[in-house]
Length: 246
Image 1 (cartoon, rainbow, N blue to C red):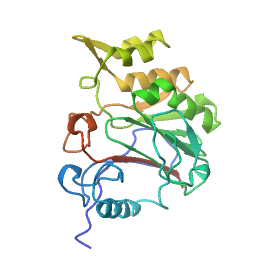
Image 2: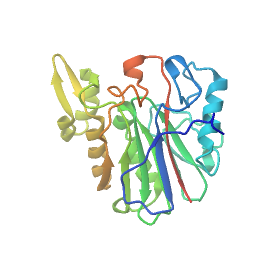
Image 3: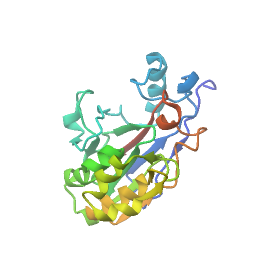
Image 4: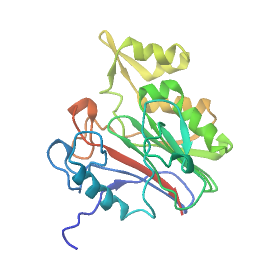
C-alpha cells in the first residue's frame, strides 16, 4: 500500500552473527504530528495514544513479534524477556537468549546500548542516561547476560553528543567520585561541564571486560531532522532501540 511509510532505521556497525538483528529507529516516517512528528514510539510523552499505536503497528512490520517494553526508571536493573511480561516492570535493560524475543528501550537523548555475544546466542539492550551510567546499568547488563564479558560486543546508539550535553558538578562528582578515570569524559564549560556519554559508556564497558565497542558518532540534540531530543525540545517523542535473535 502506497500510504504506508517506510521506516528509516540505523543499524549497528558491528561484526555480529547473522542471526542477530538490531536497529534504532529515527523520527521519520510515522503518523504522529506536531512536536512528536512523526515516528514517536513512546506512550507516556504527551502524544495522541492512537498515533503511537499506529506507529508501533508500523514498527511491528519489521519484527518477528511484538517488542517487550519495560518501564524505564533511570536505574541499573536488567531483566530477562520472560520476567518483563508486565509493561510496568521497572528496569533499564532487557536481555534474551531465545529466538524471536524482541527486546526494546526508548530514548530521546539518553544512550541506548545494544549487546550480543559472538556466537549469537544472547542479546540485550540497555537505556543508559547519565543516572543509569553512574548507577552501573551497563555493568549490570553484562553480568545479567551470563556470558564471558570478553565474548561480548556492544554498539552505542544515538544519544546527546559531547559538545551539547551540559551538566553540573553533581553529575561530574557522581562519576569521578567513584572512578577517577571518568574525568576524561568531562570538559570544563564555564562553571559547568560538558559530559561525553559515549566516553563514559566505553569506560564502563571496558571496566566490565567488554573490549569490542562500536558506534557513538551521533548527536540527538544537533540532528533535529532524524532524532528526538528531550534536552533540545522538552516535549518530544521517543526512538526505539531493538534487538532479537533469529
